[in-house]
Amino acid sequence: MDQDMRDSMMGALENVIDPELGVDIVNLGLVYDVDLSEDGFAVVTMTLTSMGCPMGPQIVDMVKRALYELPEVEEVDVKIVWQPVWGKENMSRYAKMALGVR
Image (cartoon, rainbow, N blue to C red; front, side, top):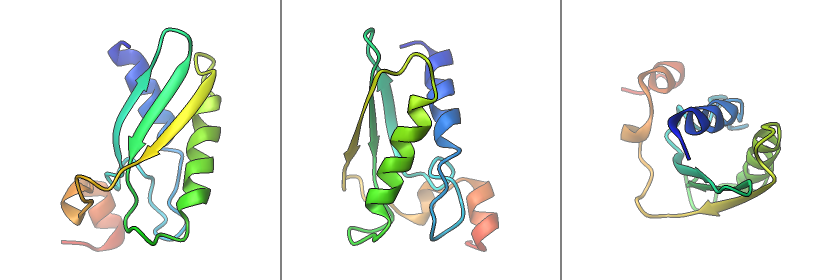
């Protein structure tokens, strides 16, 4: 996968807003990796802010819908991982400012 496709995928994921925090999952630092095979199979490796995140299934559904908007994507697999553990240091400056985190 080339950098342009990676950028397109990450751009699509910036439209996925965490319903509880009101900030997109990319700026929150929840997306660890994206990949797209030659046949259009997309894999997103990401985490959630906590293991008990009640919005997890909704966020996964939003990730899939966002990536299906890209014409190159035929199928999407979202892998939720817990290592490395998410922390506020994963957040972009924008997300920290939006949430008032130092």
